[in-house]
Image (cartoon, helix red, strand yellow):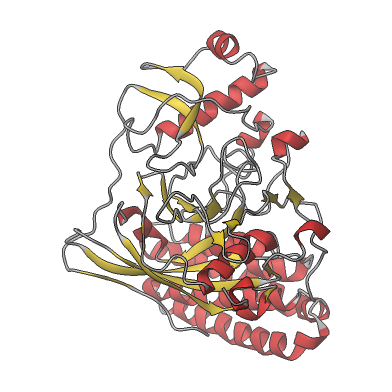
Amino acid sequence: MAASVSCHYFSSPLTTSTKSIKPKLNYSHFAPSLSKGSIRHFVPLCSSQRSLPSESECQDKEKDWFLSLKKCAAAVALSVSLITGLPGSQWLSPAHASTPALPDVSVLISGPPIKDPGALLRYALPIDNKAIREVQKPLEDITDSLKIAGVKALDSVERNTRQASRALKEGKTLIVSGVAKSKTDHAIELLNKLEVGLGELQQIVEDRNRDAVAPKQKELLNYVGGVEEDMVDGFPYEVPEEYQNMPLLKGRATVDMKVKVKDNPNLEECVFRIVLDGYNAPVTAGNFIDLVERHFYDGMDIQRADGFVVQTGDPEGPAEGFIDPSTEKTRTIPLEIMVVGEKAPFYGETLEDLGLYKAQTRLPFNAFGTMAMAREEFENNSASSQVFWLLKESELTPSNANILDGRYDVFGYVTENEDFLADLKVGDVIESIQVVSGLDNLVNPSYKIAG
């Protein structure tokens, strides 16, 4: 187990840079930019001065985009979601773009999204074992139980704990049978630790020690996640031939990104732990790990921090991406989107291009600190080195109702210290990004080639 990371700050309270929303704004579509000196921001879905647009205004102004009242309703809902969290109107400007991919409006009201990055990563694994999921779910539900005030929360936590313990006892044989044979011993070791830990959690509840619940929950879910990863036997699919010689992450990797924070009396430096998911984005994650091993990002500034995203990766000079020394050209990677229910990602096309308006992405833009590639707006396969972390989240953006899902390729999540992303500013410096684990999952590493 790798050592934990921390953020170093002074004793005064931390404050975020998020500003209150102005009454006058454009409700817009997000587009991370690759442009030098400026960031391409948003493309309006509907515009308004002080109130939400009517159906007729949506249809008149966006008639080429919205083919039905249902899609217009989705646009209004997304507008409301932006109102709840945009930092201000200084970076909202009209632009032009292709039609945003909009799902069926029923997806918008299907329930609250999963926001926890650890849970998103667990559900994104290419496994199908109901027994382990029945242990996982009540442990994750403890988070909601702890929202109840005071020690009353512990009654709900106790029910969650008993449910998880019962599911483990009844399903242990099925869980073990789903583990890859080469990893069985390790999985059994984790399951034994999980069983002991559930007993310890039960004792914590009986002692009415509310503060000890969350750390123990995190420990137990780490065991669950470890067992689930042991269920993956090899890499589950073939990457298309045209990308097979690129750096590929065939599995997962963890990196630590150390950022030096300038001109902030509350925060000196912070180390962000990031899990990269090569099961669902092998080309994208492989490209990033390869650049990390080249120390491409070390010493690079944070180049955008507006309360909605944090972005970096634009090198000095005229190039807007990584110049491969072997070709002296910018290395680009394809858009790579994994959809729930599919065995392999789609390449080079947005979900809108494919007509998959109801499809859900395996790695959605749900978590604070979702990590994705920036690209040219009209060029799906133009991503190179520029990455961004999403800060905005809203109850109105469940999986695939977010206006980014299916348009930009997510390949990881910040799993530790993600809240401190909101404190970063333009000019803060990435001192280093280092691979903590999973480097052995990288194939075709170009950083080992001379030059």
